[in-house]
Image (cartoon, rainbow, N blue to C red; front, top):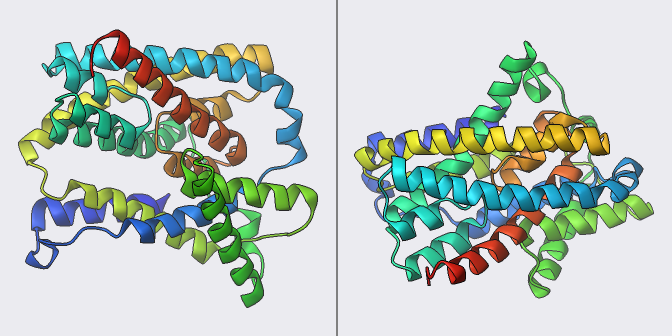
Length: 324
């Protein structure tokens, strides 16, 4: 994922080390990012095939495994941040969620958590996952995987007409509007993805995104993540970074063990399940799935479900533990 990771690291270095005066009052326009995330949603929706539909009978097993993952990941992370990091109880609790980034930040702020640590820890979770997972899989397999091995999506190689570009933009915009209207989680991704999936499965439309548009979407997502480090103290960042490494390592091991068990039960490929259980952002992990030639629709479905489960679990656990 050179476009996403390159944009992430270059923008993070600019705001952390260079700190140009022109960026003092600048904040990345999130509506601009939303448009490109919607394009990623359209791209993923076009990957829905009969193979994914055939897996419907096995999804209850994987969803049950996801519930176990969310609970164990959250409380394991809370212990890591509380006892290794020395965070107060509220900061450790809300920093440890394996998803629901914005919900964790909003609820954590209301509960008295340290918002600087909470924000840095949540964004580092995503960044560490999308950086280390493809690299780790390449090292483990002994060869580059996905896009690093020169693989490209067939849609990226197709000839695209101006009419197709307009249709893609309309599908992204309409999907985003409908998802916000009915309040779907991760609306900027899930709405366009569902609409494009329905159009593809029914044969109404045959959407193909050009490779330059896919690269642009990755770049925008990467830069928006890197810009989140603006104004972060380097000492605080170093402290959060090593804790994020420990936390992500724990969650990847947990996800790997659950994926191995579910692989034996369902027959779904272990790699696809591992990416589905890896706690990155929905848009970012969907890009990882595409780059590793995994089933992006299956992965996106599980990550949207992970966010829903995390928000529900977070609310229930906060009430039980008196965190509100």
